[in-house]
Length: 514
Image (tube, rainbow, N blue to C red):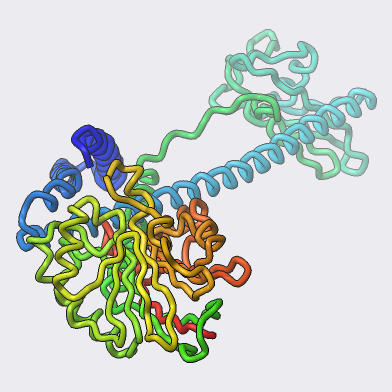
């Protein structure tokens, strides 16, 4: 990677990392408590983790691997946890918004129902008043009833800007009297000497009319907001908001922690063995049942070390393959730092040996240096060439090409299928080793019966599994084009965050059928 690309990469990733950690500080610390000590702890923690994340690529590139192992493991695990924290906070935010919208809809329905009820009550009051006026019978046996009469005579009662409702009742047929009572809260009635009655300006609270046992209540129904009228918004409940922030943050931490823990266990757990049987065009019957162990994307580096490699070699040898193939992205570091861990491959045992082709990551750390080092470890490197596997009586061609993207990145030697197949008999059975599955259909048209690839990791962990399946036509697993086949490995190790969620690591055991 040249200086300009590195600087651009560092700038973009640095800005994104800072923005993400500021957001996490606000959601996990600032929004959950007002205590200064808690917020200081959060600010310090986010600053340290964000800084380490920004520097992780350069630190692991320029410092000795042994000194960066623990830091790299912790920092890249945090990288994966951050992704799940953001995902969890996003999901919970959507849930909260949906719940608030549903609650608001229910409140609107209830408010409209109350408004309709109030309107109906007002209408009933007016109907009762009209009936009383038609009857023409008024009875006033108390000062309060006199007030009711004066209200009807004047038509209006001043009540602090609120319209009043005049109420009357007809005479009771059986009781010999009728009653209409007006109650005025906090507005005492004063009776003048001349018989005139005055009421102090105040809201009329209730007017009760009794007619046949019917009670009509509040006189101030005009104060109830109608369906189209604005109502005062409820005050913000700070304690409720704080509780929701804490519940959201706590739930996100628990969810992301659980998924991250599972992902780490899956990444460091020994790879699963997937069995695949492929009918290879042109394969001699004497080679029917020939087995190949396929490894890809091991990524030996700051996190994957010699113990991981020793266990991987032991599992491969237990499968007793006829041939072992490694399709690139073996390393993430220089020969001087990683040779002790990679040298475990010299212990691989198979009847026809171990073969390797370059991936894009080998080019980051000197493809030529690694090709030479691997040859010294007993691993055969195929750089745009082919070899014959088997004996004079029965054999097939093993073809190996360099990484598909090497030429695009400006390296001198890259993918060259024409050079790899030069001088080969196209009628012979063939297996192509290519790090990326990009050119498979063209290779199939040129006679490659089976291609073994990697590179995609199957997405490695959710949600990138979805992105990879959308980007790559052949993301992981076995694919067919007529009688030609492609197998794309999910990878044996991992890159970046030590996580495997939804795409477990694998060792592929391919059985060739005649």
